[in-house]
Image (cartoon, rainbow, N blue to C red):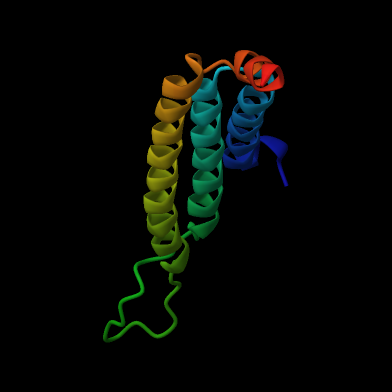
Length: 119
């Protein structure tokens, strides 16, 4: 098993760490939402790349094929659902950030916490 043969897992790990790093280190709420979106994209990538079977075809029954190898379509269906949920969650997060900006006058986490401690 060659280590570089699993490049999709390496890409997944790098993108996942990039998203997590963005969420942890940034104080701007928009940047945190972007980090969460990157994190979600890494998970999507992992599920989609795990689905690929070498020599696999679409799960369609054909005459004359005795022992076909099929790729599982379930992860792709689950990822489509997850993408819709991810977009909805991001839209809700952006709407909340707009309300926070209206209430506090800033989208920086430190400014919001400082203003909350004043009250």
